[in-house]
Length: 111
Image (cartoon, rainbow, N blue to C red; front, side, top):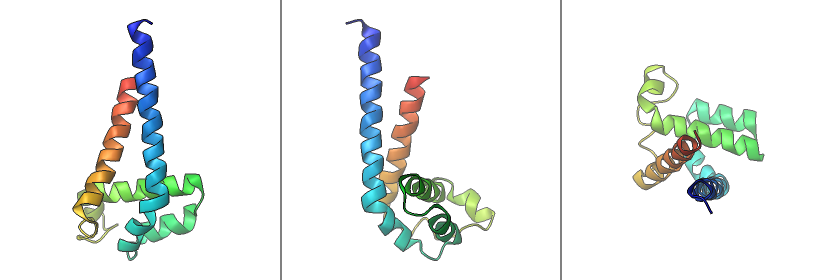
């Protein structure tokens, strides 16, 4: 097979692995993260608006990722308290950041 075919197979395999890991986060770690940030209005709003479906869980996970990745900006806007990102364990924060970094790397590989 040509080299390009192997590259495409590797990228789509990587995307498949990313989707599986994201579903794992949605089903197992999302509730724990939301419980730790239960007093943050953004988390409460996302949970009430988006619900518990597949797309809703993804949107709630995206909201938590925004809190972790862009905590200074969201704090300066008054959307989250100053210590909101510190309530999650460092391992959980790193796992979520790695998940989104892996997702962005997959998107860049497709471009």
